[in-house]
Amino acid sequence: MALFSKLIARIKGSSDPHSSDWSDLELELLQADLGPALASECIEQAKKIDGQSPQDALFRFLSSKLCSKSHEMNLSGSTSTSTILVVGVNGTGKTTSVAKLARFYKSSGNTVLMAAGDTFRAAAVDQLKTWGMRIDVPVISGQENGDPASVAFDAAKQAQANGVDVLIIDTAGRLHNKSDLMFELAKVKRVVEKTSPINEVLLVIDATTGQNGLAQAKIFSESVDVTGVILTKMDGTAKGGVALAIEAELGIPIKWIGTGESESDFSPFDPDAYLKTLLS
Image (cartoon, rainbow, N blue to C red; front, side):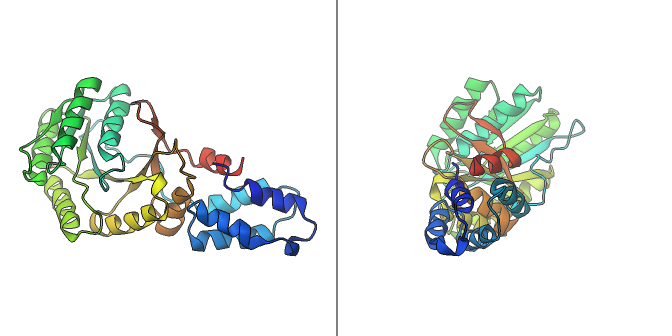
């Protein structure tokens, strides 16, 4: 995932930076999912860097493009239930991410409850129940094709009544450009907030989808005020540039990285480590 290795080599190896074909390097950055605006800005910045310490200079520049908001989770602490709403289109690894989040918080000593709010996909409900048995976390579910908001509301009430530390709600994920899904998600959020404040709305994005991930982030943010991103499938062909594009263009912090199917292939996003990997 060293997106900038050729750019750094170009800076180090040229005594005349105007002699190279910068457009080829810009194309590589575009192919790495940085998006046209950020790729162009990176090239312009690179042209100004001398050959002494391009890694340091690019690190400082890219750091300035990361979101200024905290990459840490905003949870309630021990005083009340922390509620996390997980959204995203089908196929991104949303339901699996819900389970991995649950495992993470349970292993940290918290009591956890999951809500199977993707009622339109029986497979998603069954998947979450299977995960629940595997990691020993209870799952609240409803009738197939039932009202997702009702499932979320029941889960929120149970979490509050039983003093659960962390409630994680899975949601439906039909195509992100459908207004009915956006309306449905907004309804789930409103209904839950009648019982419990929502601490985080996490959008799951498949890193292999490239710039389509940026489009998804824009649309979901307009409907449910996304507070953070879970970037999945970073173990495959994904170049990871979309994470920087989302942070730079939308100001939404990446909070979690998923790198595989195993329950342990999930970790908090480390901005410095991410940038160092891009530059290594």
